[in-house]
Length: 195
View 1 (tube, rainbow, N blue to C red):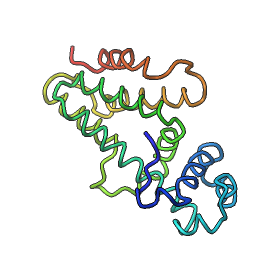
View 2 (cartoon, rainbow, N blue to C red):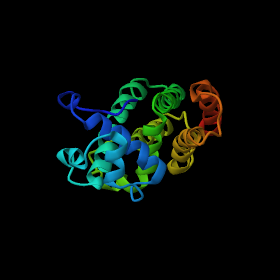
View 3 (tube, rainbow, N blue to C red):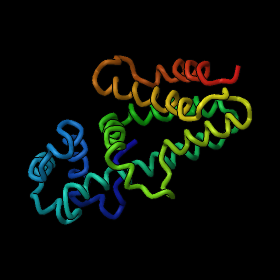
């Protein structure tokens, strides 16, 4: 998972601005980060940021929206391409951990920003939670997943993946998450499968 940048803007100051913004937003929070700090870290003038975004909040939304959409499309193409619920869970966990390991700061930003930004998504926007909702609904309909409140199964799957990513970002998990993907997938499967 890399910060998505339009090809037409690859040779502008935008890549540095986005890299600095996501780093500072994770370290200090959006509210705790100033435009001046982003510009200084990116080694650009404040005006370079304003050429691309009207405000720091617009920059934060852009980082969230564009990168979450791209990540969701990757998950959608891989997770829902198979029918077996156990395999879907395995792919979801493996892809989540691979994305987190590739760019932990960006992945952590997406997790942190979810509570602030996800409400801005309209109903037709897909996000990883929608994929897990579908995985659970179809898994229960096929009889592969236990008869439980779908919200509980959703929380076990998505919450387990995201919590390990947060622990990794805080230095509380010393091995690459990709080494734990199969173990977590199997643990989740044993928790959610129909008995």
